Length: 404
Length: 138
Image 1 (cartoon, rainbow over the protein chains, first blue to last red):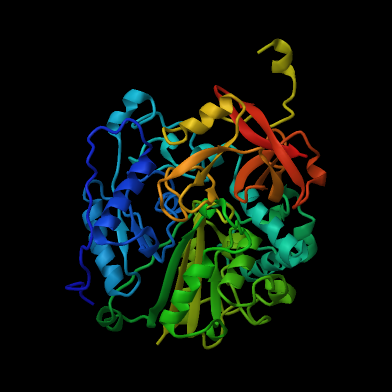
Image 2: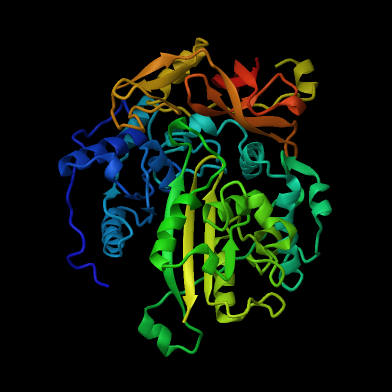
């Protein structure tokens, strides 16, 4: 597919000031966004794709998307220094040509002179906080718009995901025993993976009797911490067909950030999968019940349960029943998941599990998973991930693949 | 700090100074005076959290600071029990104005915290920074 003629620059705006001592960096990003949208005759509510680079304060594209109240289907924080925004324009055209989005917003803003007031950049990096890594050149932690209001409370992955589990239990009656079944299923798969960090099969009792880390999550509700890594190669059909490997093609994709959204109608019982899933299913032209194997990001057991609901594998609130009684165990249940043992048992390289989710889904589609966990005739697979924190702001990504 | 304080085992989590910028400065200046501010949009009437210049709901920049009594109820919480010198409770409070914020619960029994429980603001000191908006059971 060519991008020739597939996208037009419909709005532009250059900030009129050359010294901005009285505003935050996030504020200036929002100002230029508003200016370009007004130039185009559009509104923030029309924007469905956002592109930014290291000058954007906060966590990738997510902090500014949440700051500006954007509801997105596409995001990109590719960083190539000063050329980033030209690269973004190309990426935006590709996304528009592919039908991934319609109105793409690209912003650049910064205030290097602002240090004179004591409130600008560059300044000391301050406390590096793992829930909200600061951007590249986008100022210190003080310029991350949510930082002062959120990063002081001792938020970790454990307790912010714990807050989601606590509310899910409150609203839907989900139990620790139901969550434990997710770990049990992962351990059944990991026993066959010679590389898995944890290969011992565990029981529901083992999980609920393990030490409480952050209520209501126990130690065995948490993924492992490992080194490691992975890589994936994508290529066009003519190349794929010239190679000697099984043909596994991408047929659907979706993505979305989710944050507290201005604090209104806060709902921590669903994830960004509720927004990244539907466009992926629509593009693939299939439904959840067609899927033979699912790689579902498993930073914690609650992560899996919420994503399964949000992707439509079961109704909202019924994830507890869905995962119980071995329903996720290959050869036993209806939806084999994470047959490599997943993040819960196998690995979670540098605390990022997205690529291993794709890799095991490809193995299953090729018929190259371990024989003990290989799903028969595995022609349709899904890989879904959550990055960041379910309890604050996170990015969801959904990938559906088919074996020809 | 006195010798006695230095030797005493910590009983509450020490809270770092919050990051501040020009947009959030009025909030933290008011916090120094014990005033808890939220932002409300005069165009659509909606309050929002955390405070921004631009309303994240209608995108107007006609937002104003408003003093809040700092009362509300627990939306959710989690007690962190490992890898910390002292257990602490993080959670979201839904203020009576209708917006939810992330905070810590202090001076209360963590074992009896409940979703829906009434809470009120209780400022906590930080190291070399303004006080911050922790909450305790009402």
